[in-house]
Length: 339
Image (cartoon, rainbow, N blue to C red):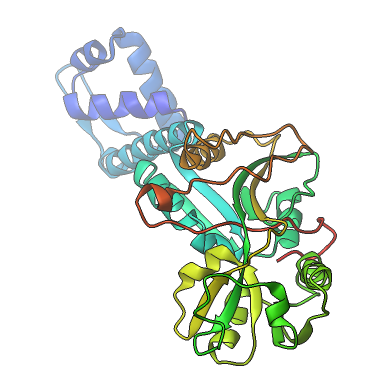
């Protein structure tokens, strides 16, 4: 049975006349009769009764009409869906992200992209950077937003934000109203950090920043997520150095104060596998590029290359006047656990 047989059958079922049906199909009557005979043979039942005066549907023919129409409709829908997927207008994308991206423009990018691509299903997974690199390597993620510059050669990348570290303090802390702070002012304070097991590179960086300022931090709390760090500080239990974007969390009981020194920025990169041939992925990458604005000059890099960390992502949130705050420093390799 072929779709041609179904089309011929449905036209004949409507016309109940071989001559008129053949004209609608732009064929002669003999090929039409042959195709109907082939269809009846494949089904194993007569679909029409015909004589010199009339053509009529049999009971089997009447039962077959709605099924034949459904098959034709399903084929048309399948073709339309495949065409939309091929043009990047339908299908699905799985997007990985580190938690700080919720305050660094990702929601606005997703919102604008979904408006332009309503048939595309976007699935989000919050993962550490190292987990995202593993998922990208195994094609379980289409795209990721990570805090690392140590990118495998098979991945392309765009620098999407470059944030400073700021001091997160309890709102009632004696230093919370300062316009800026030196790190030395935090000596002796109990620190909350993202755990070494989750982000060894960030953990080591905090130690280095503090020791270069002349003291070793008293790390009292090691947590798995940035918002857990901020939440603990809001309870008055300690202080922290966090990416500036987290100041947008607006968590009650916290104050965010800039440092009076320059530290290595906390970078976020958008990564995807260069070899993936996926029009929807290409459309999303274009949306990420568009969110940068022309002033940043950021672009997809050759595999293995790192972008200029001084270039800052103009997020979609900034474009709408909400702002995102500064950015963040680079972190470990795929074999390390990166927050």
